[in-house]
Image 1 (cartoon, rainbow, N blue to C red):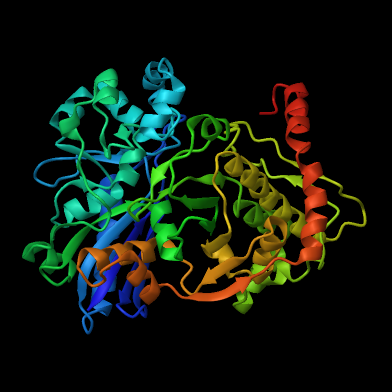
Image 2 (tube, rainbow, N blue to C red):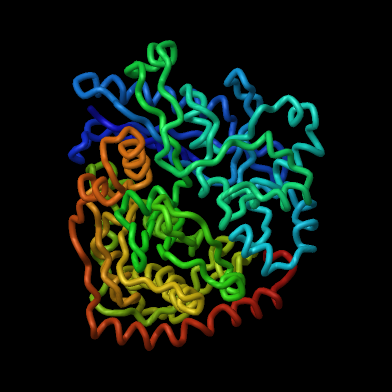
Length: 505
């Protein structure tokens, strides 16, 4: 028997079929494009995305005939919710988090006591969340809104379209702004304030809860075994933490992709005031009694890609022709110790604490003696300083991190992980499977099907640490000295930006 985990993201989906001893049986992936029907709008063609997910399921199912899929679960991006009918038909597109629609609802929520609203919802109101976009649909697409049976996030939508009941976990429900975190229920107070009918939202349950089985007709269409268990999934960041083995307080997942995100795990709800000041949220983890937050940077690994495409395009083309990884070649040029550069990685809209929508990064310390290796290492140091600063914000809220589990494409780089360990002063453990979102979904599938009796048992069986990167004490002290200067960059950047000509964003 095998377990199928599905990770549905903003630009693509990844599928992973695992044996119950953790061996990978099959993988598949598909990509899709963002639609931009108007300026500042961003949608996915939900029908097209689902067709691609189904195509990937067929590919995986064909490779698991000798070890049939017993249970299926999905993780997904938050915020984006798709309208569906009671007959399991997709009625329209989903609106993505970085779409700007829904500002009118934010004005309503802004009138509330911010501390009280945070204590209830675990969030400060922002346009990124999915709930305000549903209110926009109510006001601007009333016919679609009225005929919609449920609005479902992608993890819930996948299980529903495969034959399960429309059920969401607390993590994805949180991304609407409509959840009462402590009550683990939709907030009647918030729904009444904004005028959102509760019956258009899914039922709620813990991730790992069975919600049905694959019916024969769907099984025949996709090549799945009929009767495979369908299981409530979760927010992709929570699944990533689970798939990395970050299931105890003091641990954190450290996702290194196009975006970089730290997901700390803790067991006590933090006070609202320092969380709001740090621009942080509170969300249920997949493990009962545990919570997570997200400290992220939208530049992240995209800065490394920018360096490759802008400053090393010939090397990239040559490495690709030889079948080599250009990142390995470029990072091999880095010096051993800290660089003389200071980089403010605000080259895209920032995450916490400022949530600054106007990018204005800085690279300080360049000279004619600066080598390409020093340049690229300086960029990686700057991205990590951003998260070193985040540790101070988290600490003020009572959230401490003692161990990181690294995931994503960047986790394959030994050099990058050592830089992070040296700057953060904490060990970084790399699991054998670094695409942890789909693995986290597969773990939930196993829990829902009764393959494992507990999260701890599932993690022991399916998550193995491959290597631990420990900080070098000397380099950590050097980086702490540099970090004291890093804090001066953002105020200086804002002053430069404010003084720049109007053509500069």
